[in-house]
Image 1 (cartoon, rainbow, N blue to C red):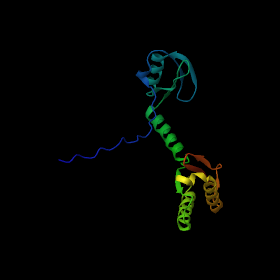
Image 2: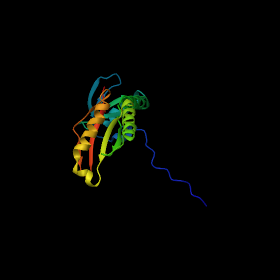
Image 3: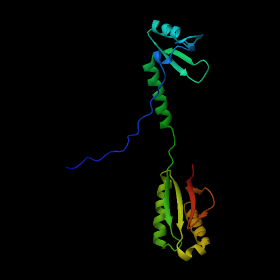
Image 4: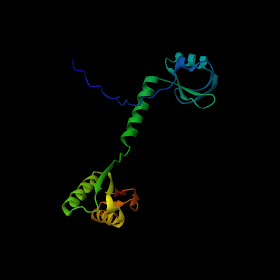
Length: 182
């Protein structure tokens, strides 16, 4: 009998949570009314009674202050608005990915052209490109060939990208990052 494949954990959407009504306990709270007026410090029981009288919820909005700040509002509506703000903030974030192009010091002209075109494609899509020159054996004795190769690549894509920093040699690799121009 065949087993079904296990799926990895599903990334859940961030949910806005706050302590409300009975979750607040009995300590003192600073109460803010539904229209934004400060009503002062009072017990959580009195604040709940005030909220229930208006058929609204008592929501803790600043838990770290002393005493905690609570507002009287419709919790479902407030949570919907906060989640909408979170989604809008995520939508406006810039996602920059890092793509990699591996080269060798003795690369052929056609292979170099193909790698250069791939790097151009990644840069035009808005991704950063990590150019990696891999040295083997005696090729390590000539790191200037790697620097020349990275300089050649940077020169070929200078219209749409800039070199973020000088090439860095680490063990048997030399890396440099190309960043698309704004």
